[in-house]
Image (tube, rainbow, N blue to C red):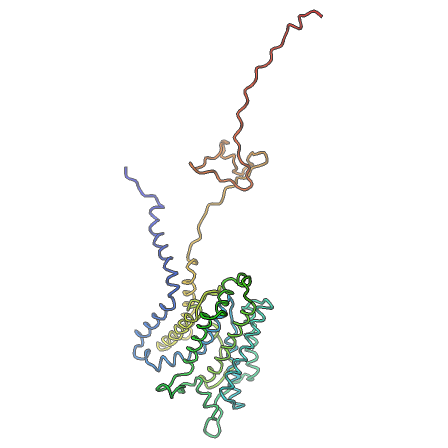
Length: 426
């Protein structure tokens, strides 16, 4: 007799294929940065092969995104502790305005401007850390408030007007203004005495920051503490790690890097705008997430953030070369971030298992089943429900154990009345 497969057996093969697809998601998630970088390069080569791979185009593309890449490194440090920093764009903006005012109004040298801007950014970051660690304010709320504070101070400082970074004496720039151009003005490179043509400073700064903090995270005790706090802050505290210090430190470092990116952005634009850095925090967070950083904390690398920043940099460049609208560029970036998060969390695509609701097996006092309760009394005929062979029937915590009724004792024969005493004489 031929046995026909049942419906579950027919559906078993598609379910297995789906399960295999889900098992590939963690692999894709671990390689998502490299895969995305390759895809963007292939897109650029196939659509704009004559322009895309030229040294001038790549240098300009990376230099334009360098300030946001530096922000992404600081944001990664915060994300590793399960926090978020939304204020880096505004902090970079006020540092940019401060740098422009120092070089234009006070003719200060670069070696003074950059450290002062870094101290200014570190101050904003320190306040973020104190509010998060000591005042117990959620980092999202604290940095959102600091975003508004820094932007308001930036506008008040500049009177809502752009500030030039190129003061002139007659027809020539001042000496300090010319030195300031080396921080990022296109066409002005550093290390020209060592390398032919020199190196564009924003590219050098971005790579240097990535190398430095990659070493901090992978080779220092402080880096291990950052991962420990993000993975399990309670366990980190019990193991002797000063969690509050680590949280304040990473926010301070994030602010310091935002302050460092300020003069670079001002030099690149040759001016400082009160709205400079708007939405830069979104690009920084996107670069960290695309690079594999988990917003839950405890997972991520600077190398991944570097690759994520390169993906966004080259993507902006490719879309611009193909005359894609800036509005659609925002849409594409948002889709990429969603895909990156899904690849990091393959369980998001897993269907929840459907389980039958447990049977109510509660019994009334005395062992008799409660009416309508479906207890040990069983079906309509009063017979107990049959359990599968070899399995014990499940019992709820409030169910009284069922006892088999004891066999009735054999009845003793009734004593026959004795009538002899009634016939005896008194």
